[in-house]
Amino acid sequence: MKPTEVRQLSAEELESKLKDLKAELFNLRFQLTINQLDNPMRIKAVKKDIARIKTVLRENELRNSANA
View: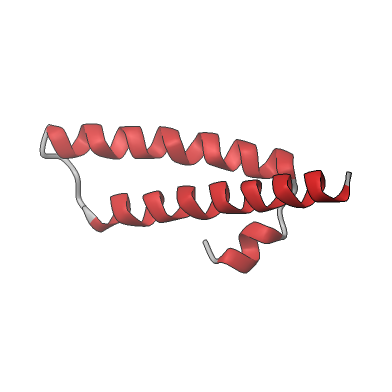
């Protein structure tokens, strides 16, 4: 997921996407533990997507507090 795609989402969509990615990360880590993970690089990609979403949520939070 690219940063421009993340910035186009609403706050509700970002929250739901974040929840889904955290669940996916949990499942990937579980698969890694029991040696059933096909693509270990997916963990890195999911972590980066979570960080992007959290960054955009924080930017929006700061922008809203500055405007208030």
